[in-house]
Image 1 (cartoon, one colour):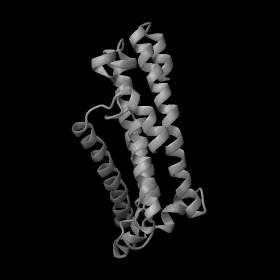
Image 2 (image 1 turned 135 degrees about the vertical axis):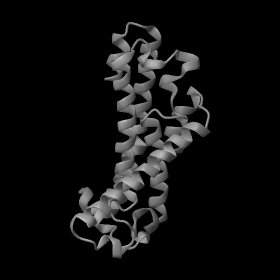
Image 3 (image 1 turned 60 degrees about the horizontal axis):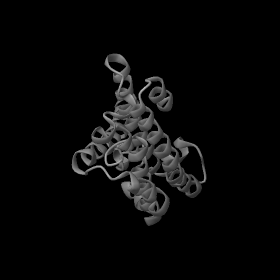
Image 4 (image 1 turned 180 degrees about the vertical axis):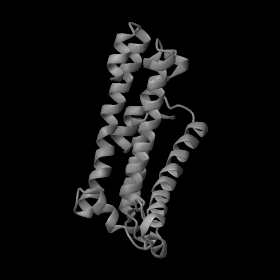
Length: 195
């Protein structure tokens, strides 16, 4: 969709930004997928519900604390997710100093709002998946709270899932405020050589 949007705007800078999006997203799918696959292999199930149930109990049973290797895969996933979401320091497709505004240069009002909304929705989805796989999902990490039943228990579990996801979204926004954009020649070596 982003490539088609950059091409349809009939602007060379938009098309160039769309090509940057394509190369960045395809490249960072590999470390993202490998990080997800490591949790699936160590859990022995592809079911998100099964993975979350394995992390029930105290918070030190969460995958991020259970195995040091899974802490590394969480960091790899989070960095790759930043690149997938086109968040700083990986916001090269929208580099205002080089490409005006990237692939959505010629879009305004509702069309631009849909691009912006999809970027933030993708941030929430990525953080929800990270919460489910590494941070215990809807488990609070405190067994006396997880044992609650009925509507109150449902609210506690919903609050735990949303709270953890919102903390990760806040970290993504915080990184955007803190770190400068990396150069284009550093994006691919980071993916292919480091992650």
